[in-house]
Amino acid sequence: MSDKKRRRRLLALAAIVGIWAGPAAAQDDDTRPAGVTLLGDTGLWFVPTAEVVRDGGVAASGHLSTFNRQQGLTAIQSMAGTFAFGVRDRVEVFGSVPFLTRIDRDVRPLFRPDNPPVGGVLPDFPFARRYFSGNAMGDVVVGAKVNLATERTRSPVAFAVRGWGRLATGDEDAGTTAGAPAGAVGLVLSKNLGIAEFGANADVVLRGDPSGIDVPHGLWWGVGLGVPVHGPLRVFGEVLGREGLDGATKLTEPLVGADGSLSGLSSSERNPIDVVVGAQFQVRGVSAGAGLSWAARHVGRPAVGQMKPVADRLGFLLRVSYHPGVRVYTPPPPPPPPPPPSANRPPVVTVSCDPCEVEFGDEVRLRADASDPDGDPLAFRWSAPAGNFTDATDRATTRWRAPAQEGPVPITATVTDGRGGSASDSATVLVDAPPPPPRREFVFEDIHFDFDRYSLRPGAARVLDEVVAALAEDPDLGIQIEGHTCNIGTNEYNLALGDRRASSVQQYLTDRGVSAARLQTISYGEERPAHDNGREETRRLNRRAALVVRMQ
Image (tube, rainbow, N blue to C red; front, side):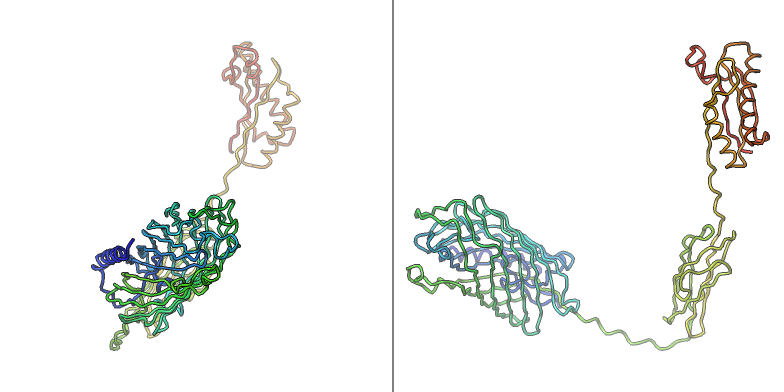
């Protein structure tokens, strides 16, 4: 792309930013000027600050940046548009869209395995293997910054946590992409020094690995200063650095350059440091600026047998942006003069209880809502004719424990204003006796008999001993013993047989100390069969004595 076309694109982007910013261009009195970084968040130029766009505010920018890297004697140029918007005065969501990325690799041949620090693979663009990439899309970045401390609330410094992710949206064939997603999380610190604004950040960058390439993670840091804080013209100075955390870029097989040269399987990178200087002019939140980047760690071309132009270290920077400004501390207005003294008016108080009906020993939360029309400080005192307070009685809230006595208990709060005024109010708590514990329910098995017999089987003792134990446990318990028969025999005979069966059970219980007054016998004969009398296997189950519990 020619320089003329590039300038047209930047001017178009500036127009878009200006149109977007126009309706909101006037900054409020409680804000100060701020800039937009290459990633889109609030900052100096490339170094972020810990402040964020206010709730509902938006910021936007267009950047043209050029940085030089020793690896490949490469110039990396990017033209990007950014955005940011604020959420709840503490969070800033931002993004950067590099719609044009150009990579110019000047080392010859393109790959030099004999010189890995210069002739190797670029960690940020590992697929760059042409002399010139042409104009292609780069990798989109989205992220968020959370402000944890702000100078707006008189914190000595502003502090934030920032995280961002890079999407592999660039052109792999042109080499303008990292080839895999990456992410970073870091800390941001900034301070308004009055005449200057200081910013510093450090990000731990976790790079994804494209197929066949192991790209090292890194620590990216920056410090910067913008002078002055206020005023239309501002000058910037920044130092940006990158430190590798886990060695060199490693490949499973060499990359083939456009000239046929092969890369090595390992490419070490000299940790780059860039110095950035620039100036911008800003009016009502809209700014335009230019600057230079200088690669501080960069070998000369004689190290690889080539000539050394000055441009190997220098890069050009342009930025147009809109930022509504970051909020600053605004002192509260002075208090109004005190009113003239007036005659003392008594306080008022209302007492509430929670709950207002309790059982013995339960606690009640008490609250006295009091106010004084003159604004006098109030003193509290609680009292009650019964029960006891389990918390302090000289404040607006307290706790009271119910006595072991039924009935209503009035609890009173008295407030005084120290000037002779007082007021009282009471809440009545109803104290109830706790309900009696639920009775245990007893259910007993039937006692079965042989045909035409009323003598107890040996197995009946287990059930009847349970009855004896239950009667001993509950003195209000009584037992009705029902005698039953099958349908064999006359009705008169079966009534008599059922009576003898009930009496056998009664005799067993009285022999073991159960009072006969707690036992009642009745015979139903064959009148109330529990099972089918049509078959012997069920008919025999009707030869029984049923034990029915009753309360005396």
